[in-house]
Image 1 (cartoon, rainbow, N blue to C red):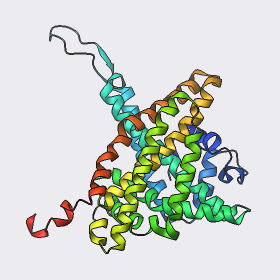
Image 2 (image 1 turned 60 degrees about the vertical axis):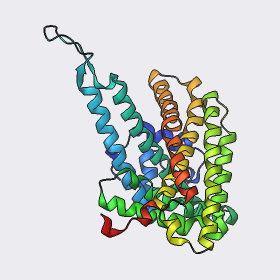
Image 3 (image 1 turned 120 degrees about the vertical axis):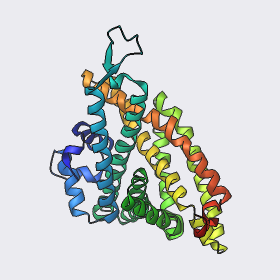
Image 4 (image 1 turned 120 degrees about the horizontal axis):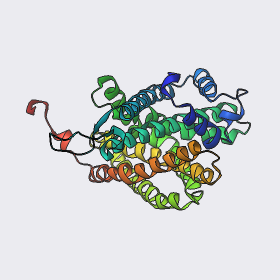
Length: 321
């Protein structure tokens, strides 16, 4: 992972505020956020986590470059007659540019939060003094592993290597991980999400609780339906839409990560001691708002396709291309 690709303020927020009580932080003697990440990544030989960090770093680098470009380049304020001098404004003043930047921010910072959460789960699995906590962390990580490895890969549609990673992760999630130990990982996920839903005390965060809760409930229902089809031997038809299943749970988990960040930002905002801190927390809340208003609703189509077990792609024959 490249240090220069990540924003130091965001790292400090993720580690010192969102993960303040985690073993990932408490079991490190360093006070530097980057060193905490590197220590976790180096000692935890987890292929899904390493892949996730790599892809999220690419997303983060693209976002940082796009943000710098939008701040440094200018465009005309509005069309004007050729004989008049045009007024210019930074590209970042354009709502369309800000929408694009919000999308990038939501994906890379949400992805980073998931990577760090995964690193903390591995720390709990390896270092927690209580065996039952180790087991619960292992179950949740086993479920999240293909999501961490595959969901960010879906965000690089033109990259063949990323595409293959997304496809294999999707089949692993729907064909194995979700059913592991009688879906113990899914049960643990539902419990952990519920804890953060109940912690959403600030008004902005409460608006998103119902959206995430309902989407997760629908995902659980469609999972049950797909499970019955697998038992009946319809494996090919079920796994044909594994891409959509990975996307569905990827967006649910990233929405959860944004709710966690928003909960912390909303609590910290009233006590912000500088304009920079205030802007940072407001940016977190606005990115969370974007994800819940613009991104999470898009999984409705995935739910329909999965619920109907649509076979459009499966039925397409190679000779018809």
